[in-house]
Amino acid sequence: MKIIGLIGGMSWESSAEYYKLLNEFTREKLGGWHSSRCLMYSLDFAEIEKLQHENEWAKLTLIMIDAAKKLEAGGAECILICTNTMHKMAEEVQKAVSIPLIHIADATGEEIKSMGLKKVGLLGTKFTLEEDFYKGRLSKKFGLEVIIPSERDRQIIHNIIYDELCLGKINQISKEKLKNIIAKLEREGAQGIVLGCTEIPLLIKQDDLKLPIFDTAKIHVKAGVEFALKQ
Image 1: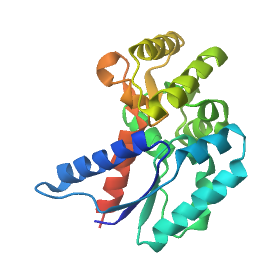
Image 2: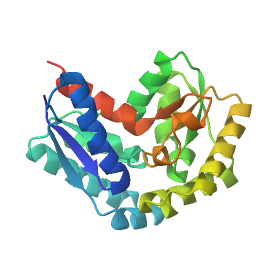
Image 3: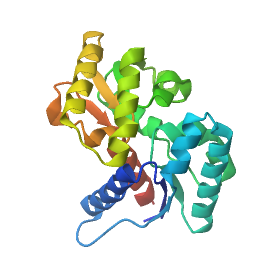
């Protein structure tokens, strides 16, 4: 099995889930006592969150490139960025290393297409929803129509992610707010919902909805394990 490099800590709540899922998928594939061969470089999310909200994306790109280079130097043979939002600089990170970066939106797009869906709703941070690096990739590369919540609802989702989920707070009222936002997207024709933030699956599960959900953390990890096991 190839060594999987993880850029984590954004937040560590979802990175812990990445580690758990990596080992579960590896054991599912290989059986017995097998676990994942992986390295994680975990960043301090306080620094990341501050720079995000100060719009200091150039500084953030340098931080991500440094993390990727350290993983490659440590023996990683591929890289997973354990967050959707920080795929904003995925192309720059990929150019800085010689090992493949497995893009979360690509893995998600393949999963959506395999189900034959054409139109999906996207949840995530305001950065993910309002910029084109994520939904544009799903549209251009996979031919999907991607719809996003209203401006007011985008702010609600953003606040739930940063003020609650990234701090490990699971709030049932917030869960109902997200379900109401999802219901609006369904009324607009969404055939499925992309949980485009790796913390949202901590709150929203498939059992909560009739529409199919795309848990991007789980999909991303599965793609990483499949790549690592390819001969």
